[in-house]
Amino acid sequence: MSEIILKTQNLSRHFGALMAVDDVTLSFERGLVHAVLGPNGAGKTTLINLLSGEIPPSSGSIHFKDQNITGLPANQISQLGIGRSFQKTNIFPIFTCFENCRLAAQSRMKGSFRFFRSARSYKQINALAEKGLEMCGLANRRDTIAQAMSYGEQRQLEIGMMLSTEPELLLLDEPLAGMGAEESLKVIELLKRLAKDHTLILIEHDMDAVFAVADRLAVMVNGRLLETGTVGEVRASKAVQEAYLGSDEEGH
Ligand SMILES: Nc1ncnc2c1ncn2[C@@H]1O[C@H](COP(=O)(O)OP(=O)(O)OP(=O)(O)O)[C@@H](O)[C@H]1O
Ligand SMILES: [Mg+2]
Image (tube, rainbow, N blue to C red; front, side):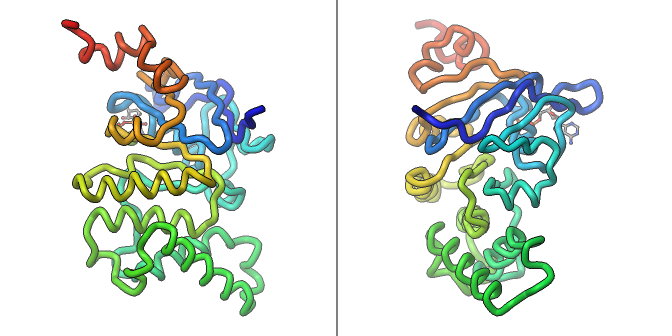
């Protein structure tokens, strides 16, 4: 039996009159790569922001491993094991790669370690930072100032920072955005490696990348969930063809 690691029930978020996420009920299976697709403004980033606690929902609920996490703040959700990367790069540009990862690791520790910064916790944080760097493929850039690196490496570092918080579930908002072909391939390989022992929820416009890594697709349009399923199922869906992939199929 497959296990559901994260689940939304009738999840909605409006901004004024705009329903950015509209009544979305969606389950994510542990260990799989889930891609969320949809045109610009479909509500994909808002959905990720709700799952990571960046913003609270207007209504509906979110459960992570049987725990109701609806309305919890982002730092608490991170501490429970949900990591996220941002659509726009979110690194500290004047710090080294190692320092960036250490700050991320520290943020996960906050709360439990705030009142006793023991040598042990300091060591643990350093070890988490080293591990994050290693996993994202930037161990050789450990002491490089982040802003001195290419845009692609900065995005890679952002994934390293997320990994330094030791998440079980990764929320990735367009990890390939703005990357060249070579950099993209590198990150796709990284995502494949991460997929072996994490659950991934990935927003990505690059369809080649999505088809290379995703086990399940969810398609959003105008805040609503249009279709979910395997790549084959979603490709075969009439609703998706009409609403989203429609223009591709015309004239055939
Ligand atoms: N903080 C906000 N205040 C007001 N409106 C917002 C806010 N955040 C998002 N929106 C609106 O909600 C809708 C969904 O936006 P969202 O960023 O979730 O889309 P998206 O699917 O991620 O699009 P893209 O592919 O362009 O990144 C859009 O119409 C957007 O303008
Ligand atoms: Mg977005």
